[in-house]
Length: 164
Image (spheres, rainbow, N blue to C red):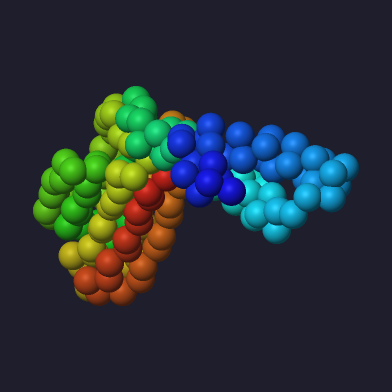
C-alpha cells in the first residue's frame, strides 16, 4: 500500500501491483491477516498506473499541438450584388493587419509557422449600401472557414484555431 501511495514516478505503482498480488497469494496460502491492506495496495497501484498513462498521453498530445508547423494560409474576401469595396482586418497568430477600402475580390497569402493554438482570423466589412461580402480562410489548400453577410456595412467574420 505504501508504494501505491508514494507513486515514485510510476515505479511505485508498478511495484504496488506486483507486491499486492504476491501478498494476496501468500495470504491465501497461509491464512495470515492483511488482505485489506494488500487490496488497498493493488487499487492504489492500478490507479497510479492509469493516471500515469493518462498524463503521458496528455503530454504527447499537448506537445504535438504546441509544435509550430510551416503552414500555407490563404485569406480571401469577395463581394457580390454590388459590394465592390470592403474594410478588411486579419490576423495570423500574433501578427495582424488591416486593409481599408480595398477593392473586392481581395486575397492575402502567407507561409507562416503557426501552432495548433494560434488563431487565424479574417473580418470583412462591406463599405457600400448594398450587396454581400464573403470571407474565406484556407489552410494548406483546404477551406477551414467561410462566411457571408448581406446588407449595408455588413460584416463577415471567419476564424480557425486548428492548423492541421
